[in-house]
Length: 212
Length: 210
Image (tube, rainbow over all chains, first blue to last red; front, side, top):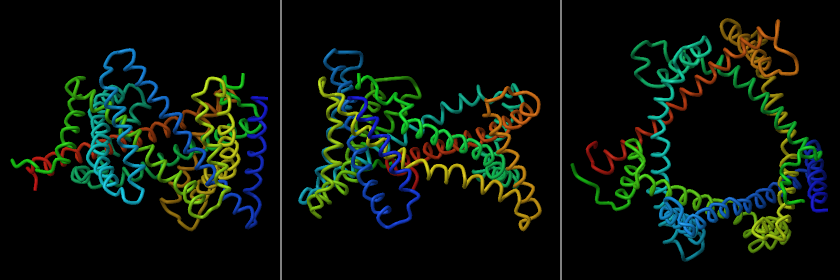
């Protein structure tokens, strides 16, 4: 029963919402709108799993004094402070907390986010040296395409040769578009096939060991 | 060189430098910033989910509009907490089943519409629209050939030989150009982030650039 009830729920809801798309009535649209709110609400609680796992990992690390354990306090403090300020700050009379939350986002989270991705520019440069060595026709195409796109979006490209931005745009609009469309077809078919497998109960990995 | 007097700018600058210190080698400053970043980002995620998903879809309908129907998804969502119970852990399959059933059912038709039919329409439209003429028509036909060739590369139901092999090889060329374009765009995005950070340090922190 532990497996049958969830599988039955998936089947009934999946078929219902698949058919609902093709029913052109106000009732059907209203059901869709309310269900969408339900879906957003239920999925919001799923973050509990992620946060629970993160907290558990760091608490264990501190408890067992694993390598670099003192840094786990920074993670836990950041998590607690940021989430409490973000949640409590929205309540009336606690505007100061919201102000601090906003400042923390602007001067702690956003700069670290940008800096973390910015250092990847250096590593991508060294990775591209290894990847872009034109050892085959295919690697040469990758190199040429990447080269024109990089030069095409900066003013230096147009200074070297005024047709470089046009070539970059052509690469984006013709061969790149063709490849992306082909891949998108595959993704679309993959999503459809996986959804059908889940609805029909063929794909059951999401049940994990919980149903045993 | 005049340093900023805003303490928040100092915090942002020091954390930025802590992360950039990784370019030399891994060190305690980087590790501290990295751990803090993980915690702050997770906390930000919690606050965003609470304010954008739980408040408008649970608190406002139930406590402001007195629409008690929304208590049901709230209770179903709370069943995720059973994850932490050893005896009742299996109950998280109920909200998971609701999520999977609803999102799979809702997703099939729009996916077919957006990822398959719309893409087909655009591909065939660009290659057959006689009105546009000239180079636009030629590039439309090239795109059409590229899409077919790319799809044939991913066709594994038959051994790739003869015409299928030729088509798949042409598909690889298009895919490599596409990956090159993606790589180029990603590199430029990262570099613009780097420029933004350096500009912040030189403009807002030490005021070298006015």
